[in-house]
Image 1 (cartoon, one colour):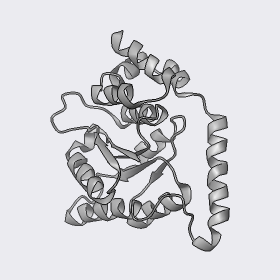
Image 2 (image 1 turned 135 degrees about the vertical axis):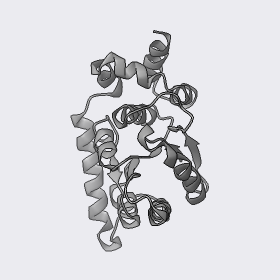
Image 3 (image 1 turned 60 degrees about the vertical axis):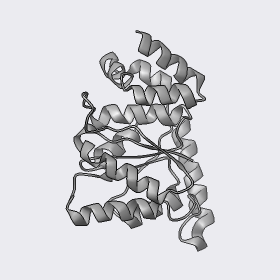
Image 4 (image 1 turned 135 degrees about the horizontal axis):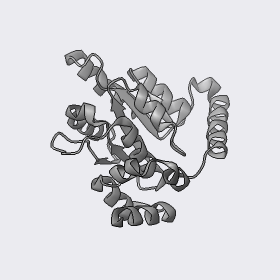
Length: 210
């Protein structure tokens, strides 16, 4: 599994913690850090980062994303507005574990600005550890796993049927916003290198030439 790390610029000081902790907890998986970094000159809002997350997942270049903003709620809602993204909100290890086992989504948002004392840092680490403690999508509790997994598949089917494709959404967004997102070249170059969605790749190639 390819795991992307990317969070809003408002919490750029937490980027290294997210990346290092995920590398430690998700052994056997490829972890790619897209920032936002402390030394980045451009600041990206959680809305702009959610579009980048939508591109990463829809392109097939990334399988799962760990993200966040100050509360974690805004990023979760914004990500869930992107086609094909099922993003959970995990303020605690138990929430992360249940999301991975029951909802089996492809992104999770953490409240990076809340209680970020020593205890908050430890909670963040424990939350990521719980997320990857077992293979995703096993269902929980185990005696109800079959019912839970059927509901999860139904949710994914309904979301797919009710949403437009990613490129269609991009064409409807404010051009200034999509231009800013396409200027985040670490995201764009990764998609062009690893993506398998030709529509998104073509859109990005046009965007960076414009």
